[in-house]
Image (cartoon, rainbow, N blue to C red; front, top):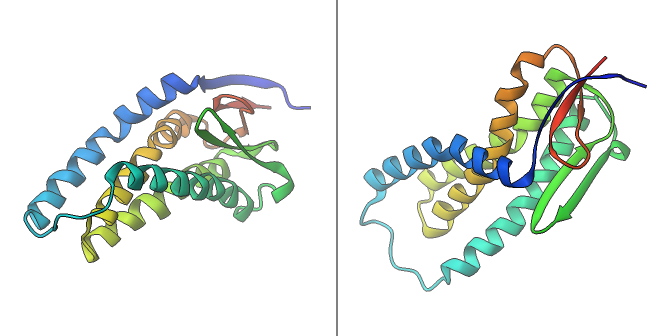
Length: 174
């Protein structure tokens, strides 16, 4: 049994607030560039924006959390049996119950950003539309907590890490 050396965790309210602050510059930069490139080129749409955002959130959350687990499995740090995806008050989370090296944990942590946020950003410039605009905004926003934890974890990247089972965060173990 590993001994916990340091715990870095946030409750769901704090991770959402701090995570949003982490991605706010990305969201603002994207909107400025997108507006300069496509202002006046996007047409009015009959799509119900609220419904679109809810659907995008649900689909993106599922894929986002699966990518965390998939990233940890891809690094050979754990198996699918160690991955648990949970839903709590419209919040999804993915938990790996096996200690991983910091670099393997970080790979799983950033995989949703690298695939969903970067992917939809590129897609939105190739196929500009209301759908790709909002998909990009949703996917960047969903990565806020991951970016926060990535930077908090950087000093521990060479140590063993265990994902926290109920809070957003991790513990350094020996």
